[in-house]
Length: 285
Ligand code: GLN
Image (cartoon, rainbow, N blue to C red; front, side, top):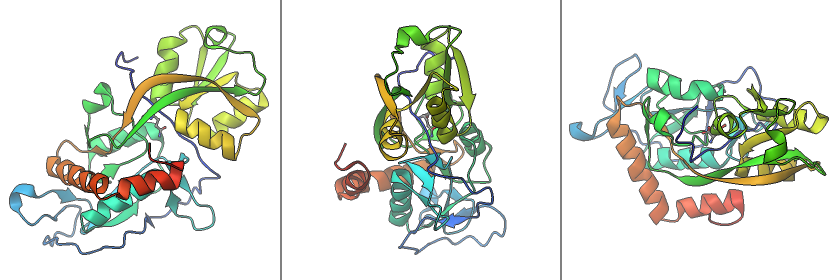
């Protein structure tokens, strides 16, 4: 649908997403909040100078919303019930730099994240391997990009499918609904039958069982999922979309975006970002 599809990416759940998700901390260690607000409802100011002040849904806490089925960026650890992943470490470190605790809301569908941040009142930020696009920037602000990404086409091992053969009404190409992968299919495989679903693991399982001919998903997620859970699937094409991930923040809270950008900058210069990249990808990207 959009024409600025030069960036995109994807999701996946590394296990059943507990329907009964509860607020889960993401392990911030520095918790010194300087908030002075006494408001009992949902807003509080936490910066020391009024010029720099931003609002938070919950005093002293950076409240995060995500779709928690997109390993290695965010997924639920079935044993602990806590979110884990690259993005979880990033936002945890951001919160830490800001002197805030970090708390995740229960899992949300990917295509509700930007509207939820736009609407305000529930979460301060969304970090979910969200590609910065012109269309989304009409609804929310983004932090500076924190990671580059691309798309991949995934099919069963030994498949002879190509971009050309998939562009046919008889071919079912699955994606996560509302993603840049979804947009890519619409734009580049206009004749294919595009099947948007909510859950990446379900989508890949469908490719595995032959329900779908292929899936289009963010390349790092395809690599991770195929290595860890879907060894009978292959990446049949990498698509150089040149996407960049950003943290989504309400347009009504510009100083929060500034503070998040400052934290990201500090994390780049003090080596925090490098160590998170190495932890999840084996090297800096
Ligand atoms: N990067 C892709 C997008 O922004 C997919 C993100 C996701 O599914 N978490 O649309």
